[in-house]
Length: 207
Image (tube, rainbow, N blue to C red; front, top):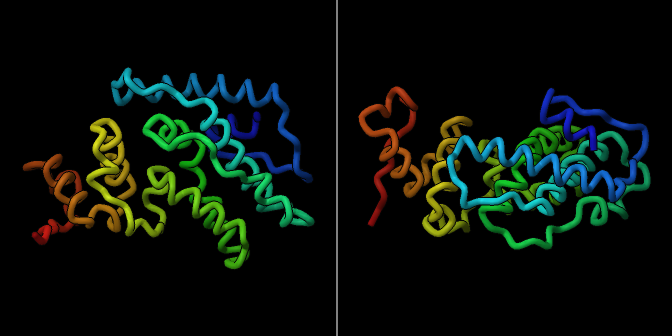
C-alpha cells in the first residue's frame, strides 16, 4: 500500500491503469505502518488511554485507496462497489474513529472530485455514509449530522478536544454554530475568542 504512504507523506497519490488486488502482506505492512503513525499523533494529544485499532486503520486505508482508483477506473466496477468499499465490522469507538482518521481525513477531497465528475455516482453516496459515521474526518465537509446527540458524542474529553481543534482549524461554521458546540468553543477561547476566531458568532442556547 505504498500509494497510501505516499499520500500521507507527500499528499499525492498514484493511480493505476487497473484495480490492483491488495495482498495479505500489504495488509499486515499497512497495519504496522498505521500503528506507528497513530503513536506519533497520539503524542500530540497526550493520551495513553487510546490505542490504535489496526483493523479499522487498514479498512479506512482500503476505502481511500479504492475510492481514488475508482475515480479513474469505472468500467465494469458498479457490481463490485460493496466489495471494494465494504462496511466496517468493528465497533465504532474513540480508538476506531481516530484510527480511521489516518486515512479518512483525505476522503472529502475524493468525494468532491467524484461529485464534480458525476453527481449521480453511487460511489458518492457510499462514501458520504462512511463520512457521516466517521464525521470527525469530515469536519469542514457538508454532511447531514442533524441526528447526532452532541453531548453523548463528545463526552470523551480527548475526543472532544480534538474535535473542537479541528473545527477551528477548518473554520467549520456549520458545526461551530451548533449551540452545544458553540458553548464549548467559547468556553475554550475565553477572553481570547477574537484571537482564535473573531468572525464566529456566539450562539445562545434556548432552554
